[in-house]
Length: 280
Image (tube, rainbow, N blue to C red; front, top):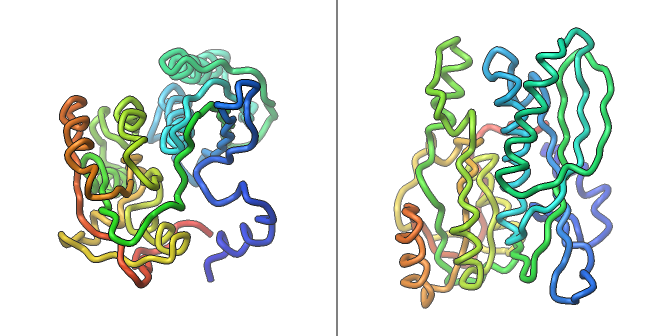
């Protein structure tokens, strides 16, 4: 039983739930809309303390939330932080944690406007990002005949996670430690695409989401091996578009040195993920 989907259905009584962020209302200009997105980043669920420094943990907690805003075609403006902090943390620990949040906030022009802190036995972080968009991109919108594409390379995060579970060290430039977001590229191609989401739970998981939301299946152009399709924590962008925009998107990708992988076409049917469930 997919308990995550079951639980969400119990509370999904409005139109806002189902995407990477909720588009809530228009700004005074009537052209811009607010997008709210939130993710949890919990010790021993999403990370172990001996895998990442506190500085790296704070940075990743921010970046995975910013990733959601980007694929909604929204520009992050504000952040709210909820942090449960172990009582044994030192002042240096707290400073390292704060520096991670501040560095990413500065890089993306985000203002941290509030939140909450409590004492806990483990480090648990929840980040809410408030963004603005003139043209939100949803997971819905995929049309039959659309080409399906993802950016970059997939698989390295799963390999690095396997190493960490085996007490091996990984490269400090690993995407598992610090996701490599592609915001500028996505904002440029947004007017040419029909739907999008980030690859946080693995390509096959995200394809199942697209399939259910749009009632489509996929005709694969290239075979996707299981170690690629099931690799989570990638934070590459999965998006769909009409073939007529392929050259324009490819040109923009070249400008930003982004690798595009057009691997399937949306068709009649359905798609079910074959990967082991990692949500409860």
